Amino acid sequence: MTKVIMHGCNGKMGQMISNIIAAEDDMEIVAGVDASDHIRNTYPVFRSIDKCDVAADVVIDFCAAAAVDALLDYCVEKQIPCVLCTTGLSEAQLAHVDEAAKKVAVLKSANMSLGVNMLLKLLKDAAQVLVPAGFDIEIVEKHHNLKVDAPSGTALALADSINEEFDNQFEYVYDRSQKRERRTDKEIGISAVRGGTIVGDHDIIFAGEDEVITFSHRAYSKALFGKGAVQAAKFLKGKPAGRYDMKDVIGGV
Image 1 (spheres, rainbow, N blue to C red):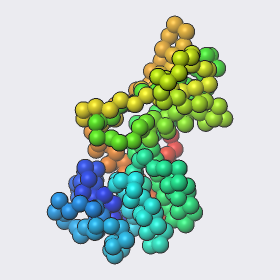
Image 2 (image 1 turned 90 degrees about the vertical axis):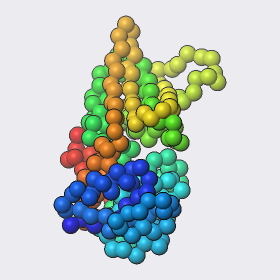
Image 3 (image 1 turned 120 degrees about the vertical axis):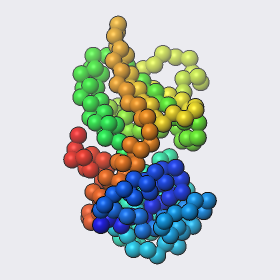
Image 4 (image 1 turned 30 degrees about the vertical axis):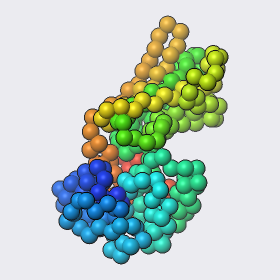
């Protein structure tokens, strides 16, 4: 039985994961952490992670970026592996993740879905052919009107998957309104759209002379991220200290 602490249990993703785990025979949530107490759960809920005194095998985090530093310190102190799903972390926080991973298992992926992680691999293969042929690269991501960070962590991960194949030669351009000049061959444009209830759309456009190739991923429900986080928690239980991601969970893609 995998015992889970749900960090951010009263948010939409926290409640979705709670429901997913409730249907699992080999997992249970033994405690939750959330600053809000507007939902009554079947497990004890603490207002902050440092107040939690319940033993567990792994923490699943879908909370706010401001709460991540305390969570990492807690996981290191208690030696509890962490599936870190919160996005919009600062450079200092990302460094904190790396430091914590030297002492405890931390799984962090920009996107928890199988489809997106397969797409990351496909883009590497495509870029090896299309970039030398002179194709320009643009990424357009769309999310709901409540998302506060932009561009999305997934959009950046998609860009990184291409950039890494070329020794990080590409510059990321987020706004073309402040300058009037043609794009260079060494840039990836990344545009963000916010509106309505869009769960998550990502288009990666390779635009060449007289032809365009577009890779697309559409998320129709947040359940796919929750299911990925649950599988990641099962994988991470008992793992030694280190940085992990979804490619480790699915055995490499």
